Image 1 (tube, helix red, strand yellow):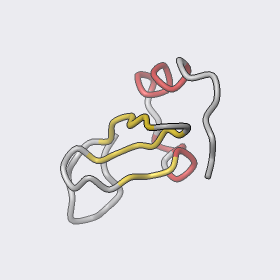
Image 2: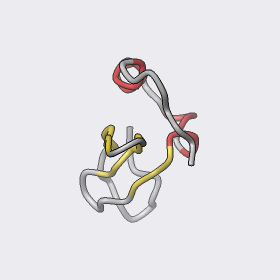
Image 3: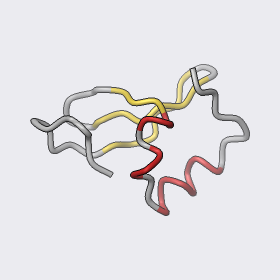
Image 4: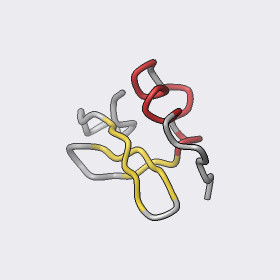
Length: 58
């Protein structure tokens, strides 16, 4: 998965913190809520997210 910012070519990784899960760019550090990048989820990311029992959309 790639960062949605046009000037960034970083990749997104699952970033877990207290009571929430976000997708964070490895290059610029921008965080996205799951629903903001849901259309881009690949199989590997979906499998990582499936390990979490609850995802809070805040």
